[in-house]
Amino acid sequence: MIERIFIDENQRKLEIEEYLAEEFGRADYSHCDIFKTPLGTRIIIHTNRPGLVIGRVGSRIKEITQTMQQKFKIEPLQLDVSEVSDPNLDPLIIAKQITSALERGMNHKKVINNTIKRIMSSGARGVQIVASGKFGSDRSRINKISEGYLKHSGMKDGVKEAYAVANTRPGTVGVKVMIVVDNRPKEIKVNEEDREIRTLE
Image (cartoon, rainbow, N blue to C red; front, side, top):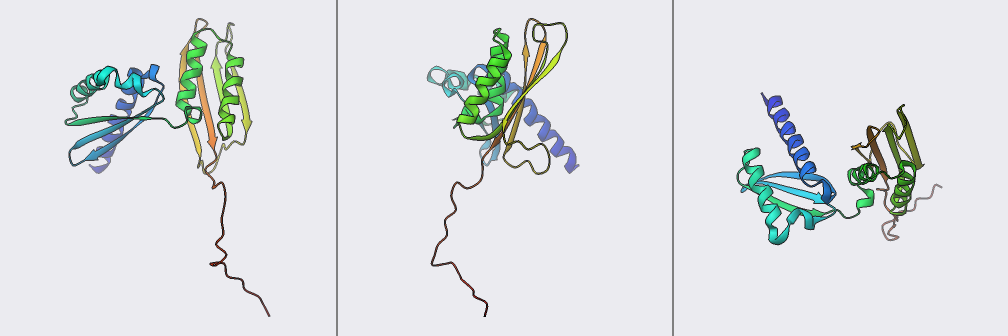
């Protein structure tokens, strides 16, 4: 019974994520956080372009709130908007930017290489972008470009991944982005007063 509750909650969260991603694709939607509060449900929308989510005088966010209350049977519902601190380190935003460029007919290798440079200049430890599908020919192929330090197995602490799809004239292209962020402390300070030095006699 408890397992069923968890499954239903995760299924609803997935449906909400898909809905918001579709509604706010042009606003560089990243993800949402869902909280249960004493006053109801609070959802924080993380996006690179909060103005497009909020709309003029809050009209867009009010419309979405009312739609979600009816669609997902969530009442009362509070929607908040948070701007992504660094969109160049958000894999979903990056993946959607790449697919958008591909749908506009831009060269995939040039787009990916420029994107990787932008990500690394923002402080990432490593990045890998894989684009698979048709690129102007009859046969599908996979293009994998990497730079820096990558983690493919074991504990994936600090690894962020996302996937998006581009519908181009030759066919469908899938884009997977993996970014390794440096979550280690930049500097370790030792308090000399607390340091204990032991000598063996």
